[in-house]
Length: 256
Image (cartoon, rainbow, N blue to C red; front, side):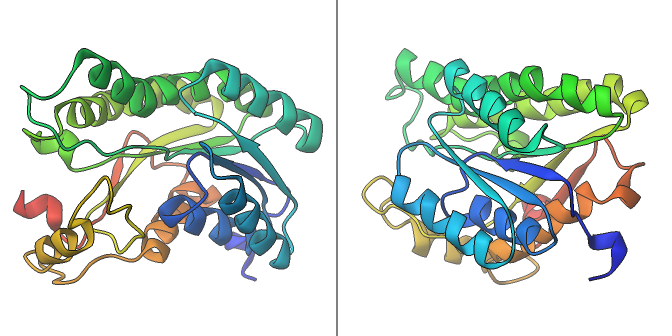
């Protein structure tokens, strides 16, 4: 393995990593020597499956179940990560949900649930793990964001608002943490070929594919392509990249 791409000795936490983009990021780091911490809201079987795949690549693993938007879960992540690996060097805030309701259908409960999971969770992670990064003089933070935060969405108002706030959180943290060797960046997926729950997102795969065909790339991105974007942002040689946004979206951000 090229030394510049080697994460041996680093510990990486990825929330929402039982499947899709989060899983791909875990496996990309695992094959590059990192210790990996897998988090899933409730599907233990999926999370343990990812851990086994990572172990087959030679990685040491830890599974922590629970909502990333729960302070108790994040405290548990921190405690167990420090007991097992000493500290977390890199974390990726990836856990998210999708909502498909208009303003008139969206409840106050929906609003709080989506802001908590996609924005408050990232704040909790920062409060838990940034102090250790500061002490070490090195760290990488990646927020998996979304184009909804750039353009808004009538049927995804809490989701879009949370993603827009996440962009501001990224820039705010980046501005204060750079002097400690910590970078903070956003990773923007576009229309990604993922496993979708069609009970909550009817027609999700077909709609994603149809919209992807309207982008300059004219296909969906793969989860592996997203994972490589994350690797790039976390490389030691990427130390001058902070407060930035990497779009692995086939040009979707250009087309609105």
